[in-house]
Image (tube, rainbow, N blue to C red; front, side, top):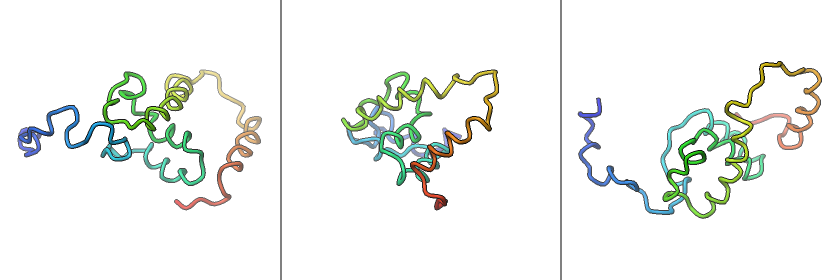
Length: 123
């Protein structure tokens, strides 16, 4: 499949920066659209910017675990990524074999959701 893709013959696409400028910012970089980007767009108007970064980039492991793609990040991205790294310890591999008591936790999470979100979201 890749051999027939004409992009494979464009020299600029085979550099670290590709079509981007150094420090352009991740908001200018075309990335794959998945559940992280979807929930970011649903929630971004209700949450602090730091939470938006956590939602949007928590699966971008090369950046927050390995330190890759720093050359594409703006200074603001680099600052916000400290929150993504902080969140990652509660994300992947943080599950417990013991099931939480959902009824006991429900009031806490309902209050937390009500603090940031309206009763009805625009999906």
